[in-house]
Length: 219
Image (cartoon, rainbow, N blue to C red):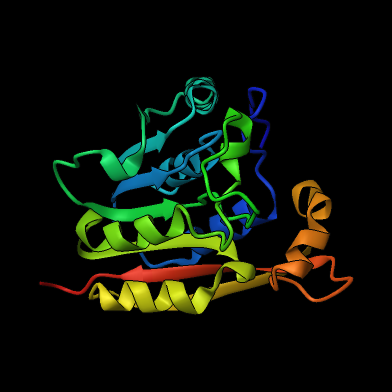
């Protein structure tokens, strides 16, 4: 899929493709209401529309990302509601049938949020969970009865921690897809730090990606 991508916006890569396949393979309600967290170019929002979503809401903190998503949705004649801001501070008037997320998850040495807008697309603190943890905490409230969430992130970030958090919130959760891929440019640049921090074995140049599915039972 050819996409417009403004400078600094995350380029869809292996993690996006893995999540798209998992969304397509999931048994989700007919004509669902979908929320795409950290939408970037909007590729997952458009994927949900093609799969039959009734409505799609896409949120991102980046103006450049929302411009990209708006242009890509317009070019394909697909209606997507676009919201700018921190999803953890937004008020959601009603729950969603499906939530998809490819959040920032790359571990890095800084404990403070990145100043440069382009770095916000991947930087996620020393354990890679600066966005994952609040997302896991919010998901039970974002999902409707029988709702489904699909999240992709690196195996470096603790998939078991994600599973435990989601289950503690009353959701059923499991890893539904895995894929090993070579380091991209960001991970290659910080390979030594990843080794020193215990995130990767010495001379390691591949990471495992995981898609975690969470389902909310009827309340």
